[in-house]
Structures are given as C-alpha cells and as structure tokens.
Length: 166
Length: 251
Ligand SMILES: [Zn+2]
Image 1 (cartoon, each protein chain N blue to C red):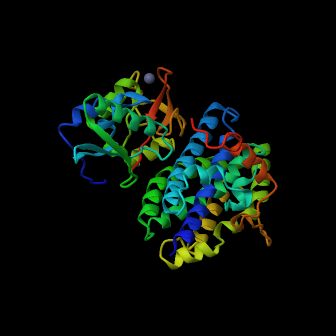
Image 2: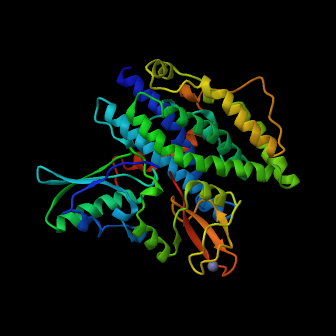
Image 3: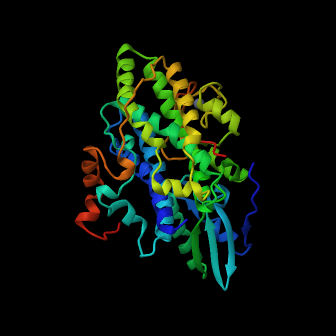
C-alpha cells in the first residue's frame, strides 16, 4: 500500500469535486484519486494530477476541465501532470467505489483477488446488475485502459470491471 | 553523462514502444475478435502513453526547442533506434502475438531494473509503465499458450512465428555507445543482467504451450544503429503522413 499524503486546499476541494473523469462521469476526480495536490501559490491555484494509465486520453480533458471550473469560480489555475508516485486503485475513495458500482462498473478488488479473477481461477467479481458472483472474464482489456470486460452467467449482462493497479 | 547521450539512451527505450504501438494501432478495427481488437489497441495506447513521457523528457533535455512531436514524427528512418523485432509487420494473429510475447518479456524485465536507475524521471516512468506492461505480458503469454496448446493449425502457426522472430531476440540485449555510457553513469539498465531471466521466462511459457524453443546460431541486428528492415519505411510513411503533409498541424 502506497502511503502518500495528498494536499488539497479546503477552498478548492468543492470545486474540484465537480470535475469528473469524462469516461466515468459519476466519479469525481477527487474520488478517483488523481488529484495529488491543490494549493495556492502567489494567488494562483496550482493543481497536480497523476494519470491512471500512461496513455489515458482523459487526462488532457481533465486538465482543461479543472482550469475551466476554477476560472468560473474566479481562480487562476495551473495544472501539472506528475508521474510519481504512480497512481494506484487504492487511491479511489470509498465514495468513489460506491459511485462506480452504482454506475455499473465493478470496483477493483485487492491485488491477489484481482489476479485470480483475471486468470479465471476464482469467481469473486460481483455482477453489477444482479450481484451474482457467478461471473466470468471475457477480456482482460475493456472499453478503456483501466477496465476489463466481464459477463454474468446468471443474468447474462456484460459489465466492466475496474482493474486493480497497485 | 552528457545530455545528448542521455537523450539517445531514452530514445533507445522509447522508440521500441513507439513503433510497436504503431504496429498494434494498425489492427484497430481488424482484430480477429472484438475483445482481442480492444486488447491490442489498449496495449497500443499504453505504449503511446509511455512514449509521450519519454519524449517529453527528451524534449526537456534537448538544447533546441524540440517538442515530443518532433521526436515522434519528424525524424528520418536512420534516426529511429528501435529494435528490428518491433517493426516486423502483422502477418497473421500468431505472428502478432509472438512478436508481442517476445517483446513484453524483455520490456517487463527492463522496466523492472530501470526502477533502480539514478535518474528520477526514468524511475517514475518505469514504475508507472511496469504496472501496465505486466498486463501486456500476461495477455501475450496467455495467447501463446492458447495457440500452442490449441488446434493443430494454431500450433503450427504460432511455432512458425516464434521460429521466424527468434532471430531478432539477441538485439534486445545489445548495447549502443549511449547504452554503455548510461550504464556507467548508473542510469541505464545492464541488459546482460536480465538476459538469463528473459530466456528462462520465455522458455517456461513455450514449454507450457508445448512449443519448441528455436535453436539458432545467427541473429539479425541493425535497428538500434538505425539500420532498419524494409518494413520500416512503409510504417513511417503511414505514421508521419499528417505531420509531413501539414507541418506543425495540431488537432
Ligand atoms: Zn448478473
């Protein structure tokens, strides 16, 4: 587990909570854990974000959305992308996990269970539709870089699973 | 080490991901099944993401005001220093998987070692990329086993692909002058150190896949020195088309 302090100014947090990942609109970037710091420096709001996956095309949009949201709230903003420490699914908040499940994306399991699930050794990923654990992986790679594709053997629904990354 | 050599060292790693990413990108909409199509383009996207980090770093190091796009799109064929393996075309699915498999195992070990580099930026990129590449390696290894231990036809094809591509594996471990300088400075990865593990890991998968490890005495090389196979020019003309036609264009 990576312990890394996040510094987010109380003044900026409610504004950043309104910005979401364009590919998972129900999840705020705070709950996704990509905002690593948000602080004022000489009157400018300096935001540091880290990508979930290196090639995540959402990062550019997220950067623009942050600037737009802050500008609307009357702040000048500067957004930097940082790579270290590398993002981990452990940084998704409890609220974020719930939002994912409600949206129809199974939240990431802890590492060892994730590996077994993706290797098809155990059935531990719960169907987001009927909650059955009688599910199977269709593809390790899903609709976006961060997801794997699953299907439910009971209700037959396909669904996304947010892959564990630690 | 001096900046020019460091840039060369970085390109030696980045170009592999760039060219392989481009090859995989060619499969967008052409994968044998929807899931495999999505998987291969996802891997391509991961590789491009990693490449951007490397090129942004190289641009930052370079004296003139180069950007990441200059490195990606505006070099000539001789200036690309990727290994020959990654530029080999997508012949059939087995061939694409075999190419991926032989590269992923190397890539994983390289990044694993790069986490100990004295260069902080390279460490950050390695740590980030390693998580992604472990998924790539699992994907390609699983497919090698599935095809090898599959039907007579799939076994024949994947074995042929492994046999054909094996001659490019030696080059993965070759060291250019920039590599040697980087190793001396504690920045670069000593590839001698990972070669044994590479052969061990690759052999283990081949064995499980009921495939034969090729026995070869002669290997092909050149890419790391900028001497590429005949496939490279076609790949570049495709990849660079927009920037060459409309210089400086932006989305
Ligand atoms: Zn279900």
